[in-house]
Length: 115
Image (cartoon, rainbow, N blue to C red):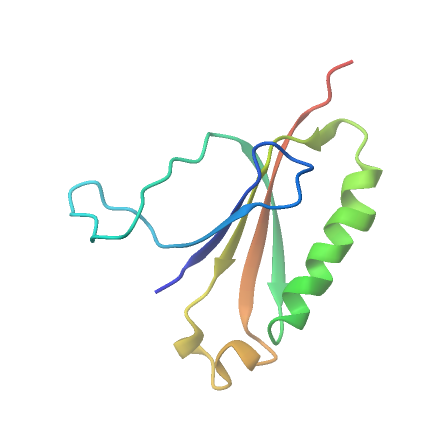
């Protein structure tokens, strides 16, 4: 279904990163052939709601996170090379992902700044 978009950039600062389209994992179920299972480390997540037509709404929030919110943090910093995008079920909206009320979230891992 593609509930999540997972950005993995563990080396951070490289020219490429891994992007996975993901769904919740059921360890009791079988993983279909060709699929992979990845474990994302536990983090404290800053969650940013996003409402509006895609992809513009998501891109606008993402731009604000990295140009305004992260630079203004005083006690926290970006924790690691992972970011998660959560996508609501587009069938719940008359215009699908282009609906003005479509909902998604961006999750950014953060940690207390070391002094």
